[in-house]
Image 1 (cartoon, rainbow, N blue to C red):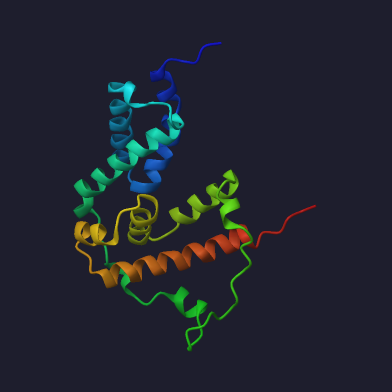
Image 2: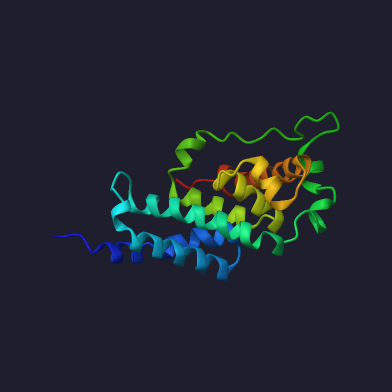
Length: 190
């Protein structure tokens, strides 16, 4: 049995690419554009895919670059550092005592690297990421998923390093709380 044509293989991965782009960009039109550009780039030069990795991995690599381009192009359309995120985060008060120690000991996360291979965990992580305030979510995704340097993010979005680090800290606290509630503290039925 022969494999489907390259264009068809790429087309079958479009729903996954759209989900990835939506999560990163949080804008349907921008996500559609990024995925379309990715698809066109892949189909225009199929010989660039040398089958050293899975097609999905190769396409996500292209898509990451298209997402970064979209963020740069549309960067001024999302106001960062304004609104609720500038206020003191109530989560920070709940998580820490006055001396800076955790108010409650963090849950035992077992082996997080093993969980990264679990599709159900990845769905919960994506859902938790989507629940972040838009500015925090965007910064977190740029830093951790798109692997942009802090310097590049600050330059691109006209942020101070201190503001970036505060926003990333708040995003990580919120993700930790969400993951503990929805994954690490879940009860298993036997």
